[in-house]
Image (tube, rainbow, N blue to C red; front, side):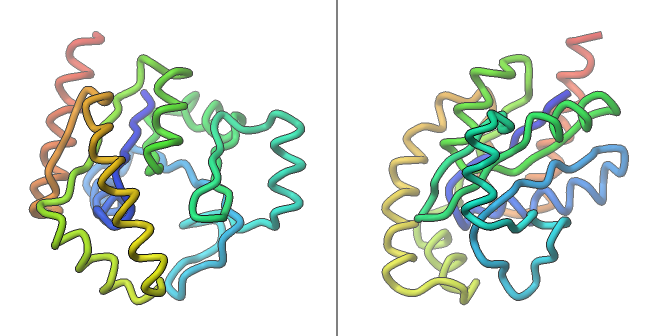
Length: 184
């Protein structure tokens, strides 16, 4: 089963996924490729696979991606081969921007697509600022994009408000358990 966690930048997708992976050790995580520079705590091959723009675009030209997007001037994408390999060996979870999730929804309509909403706009802004990784212009762009992305939540079967990470993880676990019962 493909499990897609999406939502605006800063909503807590990565934190939720990391907690979900600890709670559900059988889940496999799909690592995205990106051309952006790693944040201080990120590890290549664990958080993202960091590659050059040239290599990324070569892979685009070779039709290697299930989805890819340009977000804030950097490229992000999931390789078809990675998703196929991980899905073959069990349930796979991935965190992805809204553009990419909409593309995957068309390709994998049987997947479980979950949209994470912020508890408030001010909480989202605080999260983006507290990261300490973006300048003021980038934060403004991310907040403006978030408003548009939140309007797209209705395209996804499930929506969760991220009030507390542990509660969000429990809600996702409940969705997954229900989905598994429905498909067996």
